[in-house]
Image (tube, rainbow, N blue to C red; front, top):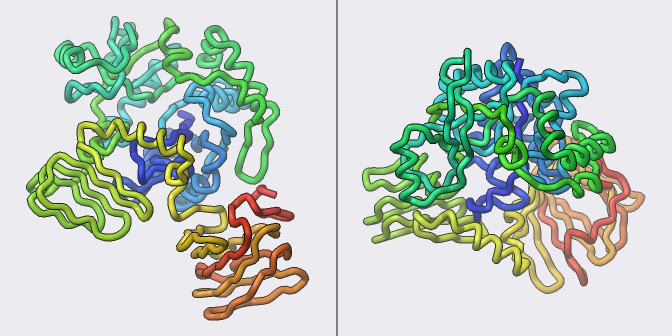
Length: 471
């Protein structure tokens, strides 16, 4: 039995403007009707081979991750929440510590949540081979057979074959992202593989090696898990302990320094979906080589990736470009420079631009809200509350609110009053009044909220009761 550990803490800045800090790429439906996270989970559903998955996610994304699990009918063994990002080694360490409490010899299948694997049968065979190596005492990683002289990936050079296990090799060295000429040499050598960032090892072996190589990391993760808070479906790692943990990848912390590293060469139709150019490679294309997604019209365009999540994108006479339009941003770049989008995001974040953080539609455990207008002393929002959803019992110091129900039935508490409002009915929430909104029905409630006051920020919320552990 393999224990899948799904790492879902990344931010995916190179896929801005769709990927944002509060809604990163693994949660997006970039290729089909399921998100990358849901596609990853779908690979480990066979109950004869896999235990229930353990997810490690950013605390900010917990309700979106939980909802995406619910959508595909999966129940996680646990949802470990990181208060801050500390890269993949601490994430895998906390998962290993948790598994070791009940299954010290558990074989962990560690998978990033934002990769694409086209060949499911080849993936299953590679996992079985890696599991055999792990049972023999190796820390196994997957090396992807290179298809081109790629400069955007790290590489693994294979060493001698592992005795007694066909097709598996010792790791000779890990190599950083090469230049074009070096990458061509790697492709020709037949000894180099793309570093996939996927692993199979026993929890006990990984913890032993981490304790030998990075005792500071193991100690910090142990403290964070020991002091974790458990509520509902979540295990919240202790903030103080986890913040003190060094940030490092599994490769840098362990794999590059252990004598137990082994590589399983595999051809999986794999991509880390690390840029818009990668999505162009993966996407269906027209006769002119264009990948067109959404409301797009193109004339005399060649080898472009054009995507609209909002209104019409119309293009004429362009070549080798990426254009991505969302409701609040448009990004344009030459296809060969889309790795540099992260520089744009860093600048936006440095300037305090909200477009770096959140999409116009903000997801909450009870539903969503979307800002329609933000002006002087006034903001208008479209709020959707899913069936059974309930906002916190709250009040505001600086704003009053007007609510108009557009669809569904809303149950509203206002001060000591309780009322039911249906379509086209409205109410007013004076400044400083205790209030709550919930949906007791079977269809979503759609509501227009008009806020007015001296300050309209989201931090002007005082929660008294909350069904989702936020009060």
